Length: 318
Ligand code: RIB
Image (cartoon, rainbow, N blue to C red; front, side, top):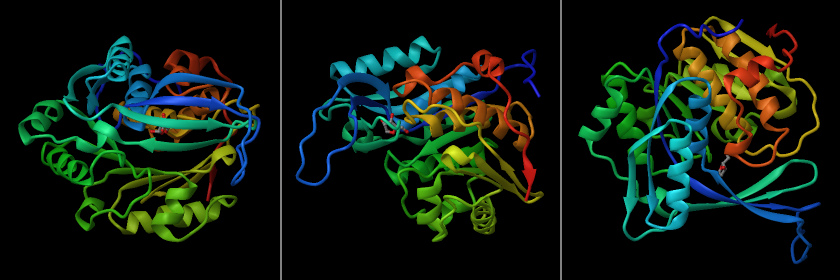
């Protein structure tokens, strides 16, 4: 079902990392002790927080970014990139000492990637309560991941909850959640690795196991859970039940930011009062487009591009 473009666009605050991605294309990643010849290297704006902000903005949401960069050239390029997407950056701090976060992204011919992140300024993010209140008081959703300090994530979730703003958490890279964070999360979006870390279950090839992951995370206090399964699609779970959303099969160029694209689309869908199933279907269409282009932010589609793409197979109740 297409989104209603006539309604006032929702406001989303994205609190998280901004990284300059060094994207290295190789035929295959080297084994231990081996040297391989790469094909190319590119500098591409990335970082889970910034990518998710871009995805929300390209869906038509009003977006504010909260994060931290260095005084270096990378920081300026990343902020400029966000502004080109109409994202407000008054919540992006500039660290006088640390350099901007960097991610080394190695992309194999298969399109699969391996990422090493150097947190830099992301690791020094420190927000005061008044800043959070200012950003969140008129927002519908707060989106966060784990590439910034956990205390900041927890503090922001508490402020958001107090102000009636819903919290979307992508616990990536996977870490143990502080006990009190669970009940502050409205929507949790996890991939197979994060699902395994949080529940001990391996949903990789089985949507029924992904549904069980969803049920376990809901039992921990989260209201809605989506488990992404790469080429297999995603499983959405809420107290009403579980649905499996298969993904169309396409030629993969680079999977970087597919999860970030998906999260942004689902968040804006929910913030626009779409159902979880409709939002997940649209998220799968958008991430299917994303994986057919190289790089993080350049590969995130707009709402119009997503709506023009072919529809996905129908979802199935589990
Ligand atoms: O989710 C993809 C992102 O993870 C990359 O852009 C990289 O910067 C890392 O944060």
